[in-house]
Image (cartoon, rainbow, N blue to C red; front, side):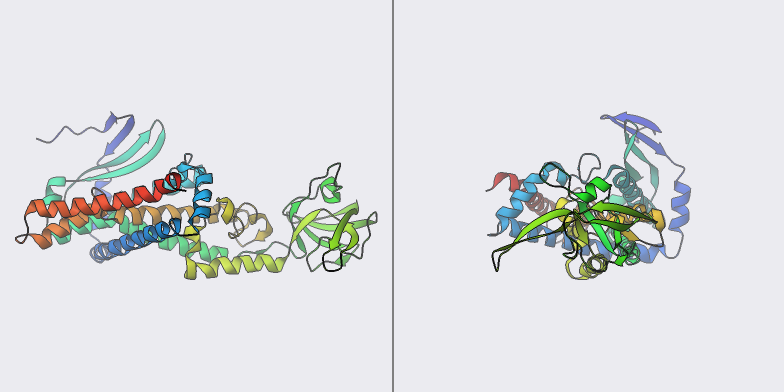
Length: 416
């Protein structure tokens, strides 16, 4: 006997909202001709995604247990264990707004794809809904009739199961393609030398830039009306104590700052001679370096998948991602002020969808990949092997993979 339908339910501290209103939409999408080929494509994508996930596991484990693994282990320890959780607000490197928005979109399209493919194959969908922790949305679901799914042909049930991870994988690819197109539009916001950082003024170091209010993200266009087109820190043509005018570009406006050069003392290691130079008090970055950063970021993905490895909020990745907090202020784009919003949203849509896709594709029961693997094994072994043997195959694979993941996550805190 079917349990009574509840539109609102509170269970294990989670608020569950169910509705049948989206069934019309799933029915309509399920009738499109493209849905059939789409379902087959999702089925082919699942083993590819699972293979990629396994490849990453083996690579990461091999690095951790290699001679160079100690340095990586120490870095992982410095990030704290919460870095392994793809939960915005708990993982300190996943931004709350972009992270939650991307996560909810990923979960909704994941579950929706299950429902659309199920309806295209004539399988009933009992309801759809959202999960809330207090007022915070934490998930989505589509309830496909389990009894029908279990007795369906393997080719049908596996397509339903593969649809969620498949659509996440496709959405990740689309997001990263758009991300690189937007990044390729980024150009230095101005000519001249960018101010990457400013030395703080103190009793032991006089920093004219800090005193004048020069900020990271500014561009120094000229000194005493002489255009600056190379790195500056600082020109030997100007002696300590000289008063100079700096023409500065800041947020689309040009201002002039009058400063007195400080003093920088250094030793030439080749001759062991001591020299003094005028000192402005900035760490510079040139437009050519900024252009190179964009080109490297876009080009390296085809070689090293750097966007997957290097997320813009990780400390060690700040120097490699042109839209990280320390670089984004140096760039302009046709997207104008919306550039950081667009880039961050696309990145986290890519990152979260990609990780959900490859994780859910793993043949670990009861993940989608594990259920699809179980259905496939039983279909291939039917009449040849006992059901208990087939169940043991699925269980063994699941246990082995879960153990590998546990070793990958806990290993850095248990070794060295």
